[in-house]
Image 1 (cartoon, rainbow over the protein chains, first blue to last red):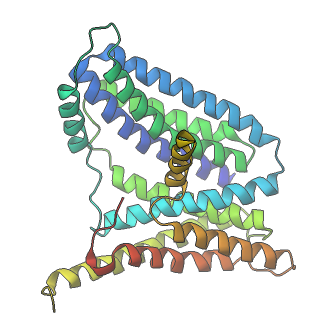
Image 2: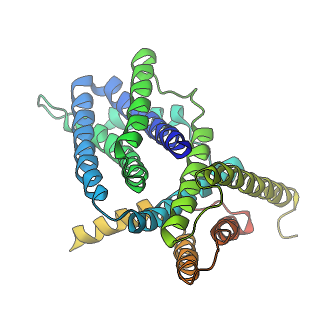
Amino acid sequence: MTRDVILVLASFLACAVEMVEALTIVLAVGVTRGWRSAIAGCAAALTALAVVVAALGPALAVLPISDLRLAIGVLLLIFGLQWLRKAILRSSGYKALHDEEAIYAKQQLEARRAARADSRLDWYTFTVSFKGVFLEGLEVAFIVVTFGGAQHHVGLAAIGAAGAAVVVLVLGALVHRPLSQVPENTMKYAVGVMLTTFGIFWGGEGAGIRWPGSDAALVVLIAYVLVVSAGLVSVLRRRRATLETTPAGA
Amino acid sequence: MRQLKTFGLFWYDFIVGDDWRLAAGVVGVVAVVFVLAHHRLDVWWLLPLAIPPLLAASLLHATKDGRPPSG
């Protein structure tokens, strides 16, 4: 039960942050060059992603659970640490925060500059929209398939992802602007913590260990990863402050 | 051949990302846990304990000399 709730929550958060990024791209080309091709590109990408999940989900269900957890645990741990590493670098000021307004403005500028072909479908808009949704969505598909696969419950992870897709799409349709008010960087941090936690949990189970307290260990691991990452943010912030106050060449 | 290379590079960048040492460290630690657990040793604590130093090393490498990391 605990892991089911955390699984849905993690899928929801991961999908929400990726959807916010994809929405920014689709909005930028849609507002600048027209909606028909932007929506067509978005729909084509969503179809391709659905095929990926539909093909891989059932395939994972037939594999032995312990082997699957080992492989998925290692993958998730590598993938999650990558997210967490970026989130820590952002939080400590070493990497620029994700700024949807700036990305929106840049995409609009590029969309205005691109030549317009004289055809019903604007291929520039279609391609940018497709690539944006497909590449951002691929991370969600990866998370849904691995999270769901490790528990033989792809449907549960898909519910979290679908819920986030609906929320972000409704908000995007209402405001018609990039969702810059969404605390995207904090959400990315949370997703990094959850991916890393599940990676440790499933990687460990797949390798043959039994967690004390079974599923309850997940909650303890989340707190542990959170404390460790907060400590690393603090160390890097102090390190950065020291470097900034030290004169060059000293 | 070039398309295959591009495909491989995409997945490498997608999963492994900016620091291959972090990925290699994870594979190494899980392999050690696997071997010890299959020798009936209760090593549930090993994986959680090994992750912070791996992450710290990767972060310190990325922020070496205060330079911004790539990627």
